Image 1 (cartoon, rainbow, N blue to C red):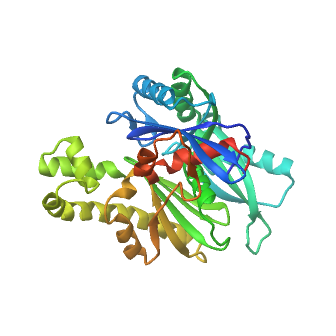
Image 2: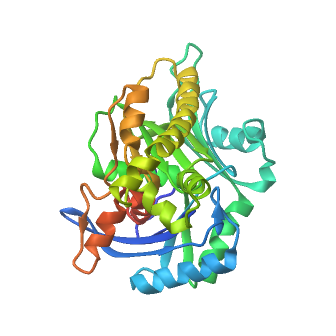
Length: 350
Protein backbone atom coordinates (compact mmCIF):
# COMPACT_ATOMS: atom_id res chain seq x y z
CA UNK A 1 0.00 0.00 0.00
CA UNK A 2 1.43 3.39 -0.91
CA UNK A 3 -0.32 6.63 -0.23
CA UNK A 4 2.56 8.81 -1.38
CA UNK A 5 4.64 8.08 -4.48
CA UNK A 6 8.39 8.38 -4.15
CA UNK A 7 11.13 7.13 -6.43
CA UNK A 8 14.48 7.75 -4.82
CA UNK A 9 16.17 5.14 -2.62
CA UNK A 10 15.54 5.58 1.09
CA UNK A 11 16.79 3.81 4.20
CA UNK A 12 13.91 2.03 5.90
CA UNK A 13 14.23 2.69 9.64
CA UNK A 14 11.94 0.66 11.88
CA UNK A 15 12.07 2.05 15.44
CA UNK A 16 10.49 -0.85 17.29
CA UNK A 17 9.85 -1.52 20.97
CA UNK A 18 13.04 -3.56 21.36
CA UNK A 19 15.41 -2.43 18.59
CA UNK A 20 16.21 -0.07 15.73
CA UNK A 21 16.36 -1.89 12.39
CA UNK A 22 17.69 -0.05 9.32
CA UNK A 23 17.71 -1.50 5.84
CA UNK A 24 18.54 -0.25 2.33
CA UNK A 25 17.40 -1.83 -0.93
CA UNK A 26 18.61 -1.46 -4.50
CA UNK A 27 16.57 -2.43 -7.52
CA UNK A 28 17.75 -4.29 -10.61
CA UNK A 29 16.05 -6.09 -13.49
CA UNK A 30 16.01 -9.23 -11.35
CA UNK A 31 14.24 -7.52 -8.46
CA UNK A 32 15.27 -6.08 -5.11
CA UNK A 33 18.50 -6.66 -3.21
CA UNK A 34 19.46 -5.72 0.35
CA UNK A 35 22.48 -3.45 -0.10
CA UNK A 36 22.78 -2.28 3.51
CA UNK A 37 21.61 -3.39 6.93
CA UNK A 38 22.17 -2.50 10.57
CA UNK A 39 20.51 -3.32 13.88
CA UNK A 40 20.79 -2.10 17.47
CA UNK A 41 18.85 -3.22 20.53
CA UNK A 42 17.05 -0.55 22.58
CA UNK A 43 16.81 -0.39 26.36
CA UNK A 44 13.56 -1.51 28.02
CA UNK A 45 10.77 1.09 27.87
CA UNK A 46 12.63 3.34 25.37
CA UNK A 47 9.67 2.76 23.03
CA UNK A 48 6.28 1.66 24.41
CA UNK A 49 3.20 0.86 22.29
CA UNK A 50 4.80 2.60 19.32
CA UNK A 51 5.55 5.82 21.25
CA UNK A 52 9.16 6.95 21.74
CA UNK A 53 9.55 7.59 25.49
CA UNK A 54 13.26 8.47 25.58
CA UNK A 55 14.04 10.60 22.51
CA UNK A 56 17.68 11.23 23.42
CA UNK A 57 18.71 7.59 23.79
CA UNK A 58 16.63 6.45 20.82
CA UNK A 59 18.12 9.20 18.59
CA UNK A 60 21.61 8.12 19.68
CA UNK A 61 20.75 4.49 18.83
CA UNK A 62 19.36 5.55 15.43
CA UNK A 63 22.53 7.55 14.73
CA UNK A 64 24.76 4.58 15.66
CA UNK A 65 22.62 2.23 13.56
CA UNK A 66 22.79 4.48 10.49
CA UNK A 67 26.55 5.06 10.94
CA UNK A 68 27.24 1.32 11.29
CA UNK A 69 25.19 0.54 8.17
CA UNK A 70 27.21 2.96 5.95
CA UNK A 71 24.04 3.69 4.00
CA UNK A 72 24.25 5.73 0.79
CA UNK A 73 20.82 7.43 0.86
CA UNK A 74 20.53 10.33 3.28
CA UNK A 75 16.74 10.19 3.28
CA UNK A 76 14.85 7.92 5.67
CA UNK A 77 11.43 6.26 5.56
CA UNK A 78 10.10 5.68 9.08
CA UNK A 79 6.89 4.08 10.29
CA UNK A 80 4.41 4.86 13.06
CA UNK A 81 1.83 2.68 14.79
CA UNK A 82 -0.17 2.44 17.99
CA UNK A 83 -3.17 4.25 19.42
CA UNK A 84 -2.34 7.57 17.75
CA UNK A 85 -2.76 6.01 14.30
CA UNK A 86 -6.14 5.18 12.75
CA UNK A 87 -6.83 3.52 9.42
CA UNK A 88 -10.52 3.33 8.59
CA UNK A 89 -12.65 2.56 5.55
CA UNK A 90 -15.56 4.97 5.16
CA UNK A 91 -18.37 5.07 2.61
CA UNK A 92 -19.07 8.38 0.87
CA UNK A 93 -21.56 9.28 -1.86
CA UNK A 94 -20.07 8.96 -5.34
CA UNK A 95 -18.39 12.28 -6.07
CA UNK A 96 -15.61 14.01 -7.99
CA UNK A 97 -12.06 14.07 -6.59
CA UNK A 98 -12.55 17.69 -5.45
CA UNK A 99 -15.84 16.85 -3.70
CA UNK A 100 -14.29 13.84 -1.96
CA UNK A 101 -11.41 15.99 -0.75
CA UNK A 102 -13.76 18.66 0.59
CA UNK A 103 -16.00 16.04 2.22
CA UNK A 104 -13.07 14.29 3.95
CA UNK A 105 -11.66 17.56 5.28
CA UNK A 106 -15.09 18.68 6.49
CA UNK A 107 -16.41 15.40 7.91
CA UNK A 108 -13.24 13.63 9.11
CA UNK A 109 -13.87 14.40 12.79
CA UNK A 110 -16.99 12.23 12.81
CA UNK A 111 -14.84 9.19 11.95
CA UNK A 112 -11.96 9.75 14.38
CA UNK A 113 -11.62 10.39 18.14
CA UNK A 114 -9.24 13.34 17.61
CA UNK A 115 -9.67 16.95 16.59
CA UNK A 116 -8.77 17.55 12.94
CA UNK A 117 -6.21 20.18 13.99
CA UNK A 118 -4.29 17.49 15.94
CA UNK A 119 -3.77 15.10 13.03
CA UNK A 120 -2.18 14.59 9.64
CA UNK A 121 -4.72 13.05 7.32
CA UNK A 122 -4.55 11.23 4.01
CA UNK A 123 -6.99 9.08 2.07
CA UNK A 124 -7.36 6.94 -1.00
CA UNK A 125 -10.49 5.95 -2.91
CA UNK A 126 -10.39 2.14 -2.98
CA UNK A 127 -13.52 1.24 -4.95
CA UNK A 128 -17.29 0.89 -4.95
CA UNK A 129 -18.93 0.27 -1.62
CA UNK A 130 -20.63 -2.86 -2.99
CA UNK A 131 -23.85 -1.89 -1.28
CA UNK A 132 -27.41 -1.30 -2.46
CA UNK A 133 -27.06 2.44 -2.18
CA UNK A 134 -24.50 3.89 -4.55
CA UNK A 135 -21.39 4.85 -2.66
CA UNK A 136 -17.63 4.73 -2.81
CA UNK A 137 -15.24 3.30 -0.25
CA UNK A 138 -12.42 5.55 0.93
CA UNK A 139 -9.45 4.45 3.00
CA UNK A 140 -8.91 7.16 5.61
CA UNK A 141 -5.47 7.33 7.25
CA UNK A 142 -4.95 9.52 10.28
CA UNK A 143 -1.91 9.97 12.53
CA UNK A 144 -1.59 12.44 15.37
CA UNK A 145 0.88 15.20 14.58
CA UNK A 146 2.70 14.77 17.89
CA UNK A 147 3.22 11.07 17.11
CA UNK A 148 4.75 11.93 13.73
CA UNK A 149 6.90 14.66 15.32
CA UNK A 150 7.98 12.11 17.93
CA UNK A 151 9.59 10.07 15.11
CA UNK A 152 10.79 12.86 12.80
CA UNK A 153 12.52 14.67 15.69
CA UNK A 154 14.46 11.53 16.58
CA UNK A 155 15.57 11.05 12.95
CA UNK A 156 16.56 14.73 12.68
CA UNK A 157 18.51 14.43 15.96
CA UNK A 158 20.28 11.43 14.43
CA UNK A 159 21.41 13.67 11.54
CA UNK A 160 19.15 12.30 8.79
CA UNK A 161 16.15 13.58 6.84
CA UNK A 162 12.76 11.91 7.40
CA UNK A 163 11.46 11.94 3.80
CA UNK A 164 8.47 9.70 4.48
CA UNK A 165 6.53 8.70 7.56
CA UNK A 166 4.41 5.65 6.75
CA UNK A 167 2.11 3.39 8.78
CA UNK A 168 3.77 0.17 9.99
CA UNK A 169 0.78 -1.91 8.84
CA UNK A 170 1.20 -0.51 5.28
CA UNK A 171 4.94 -1.23 5.35
CA UNK A 172 4.08 -4.79 6.38
CA UNK A 173 1.82 -5.10 3.34
CA UNK A 174 4.58 -3.72 1.06
CA UNK A 175 6.98 -6.40 2.33
CA UNK A 176 4.31 -9.09 1.83
CA UNK A 177 3.46 -8.00 -1.73
CA UNK A 178 7.13 -7.83 -2.74
CA UNK A 179 7.68 -11.44 -1.67
CA UNK A 180 4.45 -13.38 -2.13
CA UNK A 181 2.23 -14.00 -5.13
CA UNK A 182 -1.35 -14.63 -4.07
CA UNK A 183 -4.73 -14.71 -5.73
CA UNK A 184 -6.39 -11.27 -5.84
CA UNK A 185 -9.48 -12.90 -4.30
CA UNK A 186 -7.58 -14.30 -1.27
CA UNK A 187 -8.08 -12.56 2.07
CA UNK A 188 -4.80 -12.66 4.00
CA UNK A 189 -4.23 -11.68 7.64
CA UNK A 190 -0.78 -10.19 8.28
CA UNK A 191 0.21 -10.13 11.97
CA UNK A 192 3.40 -8.28 12.87
CA UNK A 193 4.04 -9.18 16.52
CA UNK A 194 6.71 -7.00 18.09
CA UNK A 195 7.82 -6.61 21.70
CA UNK A 196 4.96 -4.41 22.92
CA UNK A 197 2.66 -4.02 19.90
CA UNK A 198 0.98 -6.21 17.30
CA UNK A 199 0.08 -4.67 13.91
CA UNK A 200 -2.81 -6.49 12.22
CA UNK A 201 -3.54 -5.90 8.53
CA UNK A 202 -6.24 -7.97 6.83
CA UNK A 203 -5.71 -7.44 3.11
CA UNK A 204 -7.28 -8.52 -0.17
CA UNK A 205 -6.26 -7.73 -3.74
CA UNK A 206 -3.62 -5.20 -2.67
CA UNK A 207 -6.03 -3.19 -0.50
CA UNK A 208 -6.11 -3.26 3.31
CA UNK A 209 -9.64 -4.21 4.40
CA UNK A 210 -9.00 -3.86 8.11
CA UNK A 211 -6.10 -2.50 10.17
CA UNK A 212 -5.70 -2.55 13.93
CA UNK A 213 -2.81 -2.19 16.38
CA UNK A 214 -3.07 -4.17 19.61
CA UNK A 215 -0.96 -3.59 22.74
CA UNK A 216 0.32 -7.15 23.17
CA UNK A 217 3.63 -8.68 22.18
CA UNK A 218 6.77 -10.52 23.14
CA UNK A 219 7.33 -8.50 26.32
CA UNK A 220 4.45 -10.44 27.90
CA UNK A 221 6.47 -13.66 27.56
CA UNK A 222 9.67 -12.09 28.88
CA UNK A 223 7.96 -10.36 31.84
CA UNK A 224 6.13 -13.47 33.03
CA UNK A 225 9.17 -15.74 32.61
CA UNK A 226 11.29 -13.22 34.57
CA UNK A 227 8.75 -12.99 37.41
CA UNK A 228 7.81 -16.66 37.64
CA UNK A 229 11.34 -18.05 37.39
CA UNK A 230 13.40 -15.16 38.85
CA UNK A 231 15.40 -14.79 35.63
CA UNK A 232 17.35 -11.90 34.14
CA UNK A 233 15.88 -10.14 31.10
CA UNK A 234 18.32 -11.90 28.72
CA UNK A 235 17.73 -15.36 30.26
CA UNK A 236 13.97 -14.88 29.82
CA UNK A 237 14.46 -13.67 26.22
CA UNK A 238 16.54 -16.76 25.39
CA UNK A 239 14.02 -19.14 26.95
CA UNK A 240 11.15 -17.42 25.12
CA UNK A 241 12.84 -18.14 21.78
CA UNK A 242 13.67 -21.74 22.73
CA UNK A 243 17.40 -21.08 23.19
CA UNK A 244 17.70 -22.64 26.68
CA UNK A 245 18.63 -26.22 27.56
CA UNK A 246 16.11 -28.91 26.65
CA UNK A 247 15.16 -29.45 30.31
CA UNK A 248 14.51 -25.70 30.77
CA UNK A 249 12.45 -25.54 27.58
CA UNK A 250 10.26 -28.39 28.86
CA UNK A 251 9.80 -26.65 32.21
CA UNK A 252 8.70 -23.31 30.72
CA UNK A 253 6.54 -24.79 27.95
CA UNK A 254 3.26 -24.54 29.94
CA UNK A 255 4.00 -20.88 30.76
CA UNK A 256 4.80 -20.04 27.14
CA UNK A 257 1.65 -21.82 25.95
CA UNK A 258 -0.53 -19.86 28.38
CA UNK A 259 0.91 -16.54 27.13
CA UNK A 260 0.46 -17.65 23.50
CA UNK A 261 -3.19 -18.44 24.34
CA UNK A 262 -3.65 -14.87 25.61
CA UNK A 263 -2.10 -13.48 22.41
CA UNK A 264 -4.37 -15.70 20.29
CA UNK A 265 -7.39 -14.35 22.22
CA UNK A 266 -6.43 -10.80 21.16
CA UNK A 267 -6.20 -11.95 17.54
CA UNK A 268 -9.60 -13.66 17.97
CA UNK A 269 -11.20 -10.36 19.08
CA UNK A 270 -9.87 -8.60 15.98
CA UNK A 271 -10.93 -11.43 13.63
CA UNK A 272 -14.44 -11.44 15.20
CA UNK A 273 -14.73 -7.69 14.69
CA UNK A 274 -13.50 -8.08 11.10
CA UNK A 275 -16.17 -10.74 10.44
CA UNK A 276 -18.88 -8.44 11.80
CA UNK A 277 -17.67 -5.66 9.48
CA UNK A 278 -17.18 -7.92 6.45
CA UNK A 279 -19.55 -10.89 6.93
CA UNK A 280 -18.93 -12.21 3.40
CA UNK A 281 -15.12 -12.31 3.75
CA UNK A 282 -13.24 -15.40 4.95
CA UNK A 283 -9.58 -15.21 5.96
CA UNK A 284 -7.77 -17.82 3.87
CA UNK A 285 -4.22 -17.52 5.24
CA UNK A 286 -2.34 -15.98 8.18
CA UNK A 287 1.26 -14.76 7.94
CA UNK A 288 3.05 -13.77 11.15
CA UNK A 289 6.16 -11.61 11.40
CA UNK A 290 7.97 -9.53 14.01
CA UNK A 291 10.43 -10.80 16.62
CA UNK A 292 7.70 -12.63 18.56
CA UNK A 293 6.77 -14.73 15.51
CA UNK A 294 9.88 -16.77 16.35
CA UNK A 295 8.38 -18.04 19.64
CA UNK A 296 8.30 -21.84 19.21
CA UNK A 297 4.83 -23.20 18.48
CA UNK A 298 3.08 -19.83 18.05
CA UNK A 299 2.33 -20.27 14.33
CA UNK A 300 0.88 -23.75 14.99
CA UNK A 301 -1.27 -22.41 17.84
CA UNK A 302 -2.71 -19.68 15.59
CA UNK A 303 -3.33 -22.22 12.82
CA UNK A 304 -5.21 -24.54 15.20
CA UNK A 305 -7.22 -21.70 16.76
CA UNK A 306 -8.51 -20.38 13.43
CA UNK A 307 -8.31 -23.53 11.31
CA UNK A 308 -6.40 -21.47 8.76
CA UNK A 309 -2.97 -22.13 7.16
CA UNK A 310 -0.45 -20.07 9.15
CA UNK A 311 3.23 -19.52 8.48
CA UNK A 312 6.04 -17.20 9.50
CA UNK A 313 6.57 -14.52 6.84
CA UNK A 314 9.91 -14.49 5.05
CA UNK A 315 10.57 -10.85 4.04
CA UNK A 316 13.50 -12.09 1.90
CA UNK A 317 11.63 -14.82 0.03
CA UNK A 318 11.99 -12.90 -3.26
CA UNK A 319 14.61 -10.33 -2.16
CA UNK A 320 18.30 -11.26 -2.41
CA UNK A 321 21.01 -10.33 0.08
CA UNK A 322 23.89 -8.24 -1.30
CA UNK A 323 27.58 -9.14 -0.83
CA UNK A 324 28.21 -6.43 1.80
CA UNK A 325 25.40 -7.55 4.07
CA UNK A 326 25.85 -9.81 7.11
CA UNK A 327 23.67 -12.59 5.69
CA UNK A 328 23.75 -14.67 8.89
CA UNK A 329 22.46 -11.73 10.97
CA UNK A 330 19.76 -10.79 8.45
CA UNK A 331 18.62 -14.41 8.16
CA UNK A 332 18.57 -14.93 11.93
CA UNK A 333 16.38 -11.84 12.43
CA UNK A 334 14.28 -12.75 9.37
CA UNK A 335 10.61 -11.96 10.12
CA UNK A 336 11.60 -9.20 12.60
CA UNK A 337 12.75 -7.15 9.57
CA UNK A 338 9.43 -7.19 7.67
CA UNK A 339 8.51 -3.56 8.50
CA UNK A 340 12.04 -2.29 7.74
CA UNK A 341 11.86 -4.01 4.33
CA UNK A 342 8.44 -2.47 3.65
CA UNK A 343 9.70 0.99 4.61
CA UNK A 344 12.78 0.68 2.36
CA UNK A 345 10.45 -0.28 -0.50
CA UNK A 346 8.83 3.15 -0.20
CA UNK A 347 11.85 4.50 -2.05
CA UNK A 348 10.60 2.86 -5.26
CA UNK A 349 7.48 3.36 -7.32
CA UNK A 350 5.45 0.17 -6.92
